[in-house]
Image 1 (cartoon, rainbow, N blue to C red):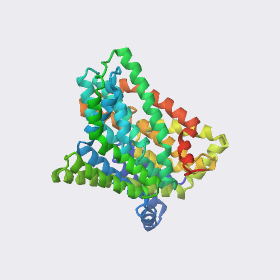
Image 2: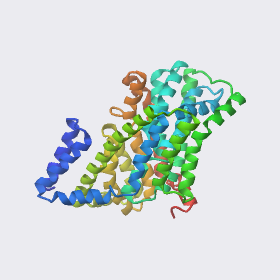
Image 3: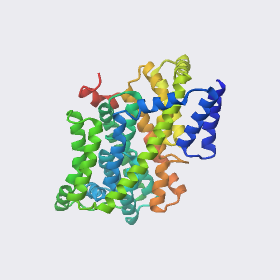
Image 4: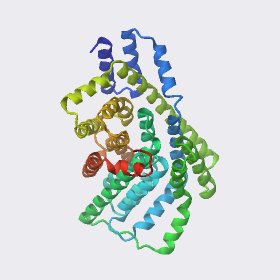
Length: 430
């Protein structure tokens, strides 16, 4: 290890210790590297601009962020929750099942775990708490079901992974379908078990008139993923254009179908979206510079040689990746993991013959588990802030659910067909 890289790593570690915003910390670490190295910073600027900020795929990210904010500002989340509620009927722990099912439906519109937890989560937690469920359980289940957001298409993390790995966004979106449905089923089995154990209340009997009314009212919202995915897979629009289409459609239904979006609300959406895009862009730019350093120092190649010297079995490599990301997810923001650590792993995965669509869905799912794991799981803080429930109680409730998610992760790891089956069926991968 040379002096420049050593200084970079020391500063990179210090930013976590003293809690500097991660993007600024990465820029500081990279700046120190280039100063010690005596390199031309103009090369770095050119690399960032040409590689990322002129990238057609990355433009989809702010478009889906905008769509999520529009969905959360109107009555779209209310319609989704009412529709899910009308399906579950007299099941014991029905509102827990509604929580999971609602998140799965909402996942097909926004692709964001945070949007799910902050928007739909507020309705879910309040409904469950008022019906007699422990508030900590409602919060933990809301956090767990929010993981479905970036797993089921569309998905903001999968768009970013497509940019990093030069893989098909469409194939990644289709690859996330089975894992998302499997996770939803696993969480609903857990809800059924815990509801019977704690004697949680049953839901209301399905009244067909109510079901039909709620279905008809929710049709404009439910059409969002249909329009989006149909447009992508018929070739009518690219994934980036689909993001713009989804945003435009979200505006239309919020104004005309649900009459819930005025000029004041729309302005607030613009402000919120710009703030989130700014933070995301800064993070992407900072991570790009770090990735440039990684490439320049041949860290990925050295890591690959080291891994292969231990074992050239791709499943052993995937096991190691899962363990590392699960540990990192407990302490580090998922954006940092995806933009700094995942690019190091991609060349190794390619060299070992790992399907990059399978790898992308796998690491994305793994990173989303990190949003639920203590001590720094973002979804835990969001649900605690919404409900006022003590964080320690939420952590106690979510540990069994994290175990459920890890079991699903193991299934996805060693049965790659669970990810690649649908993309292969439609001819997006061989």
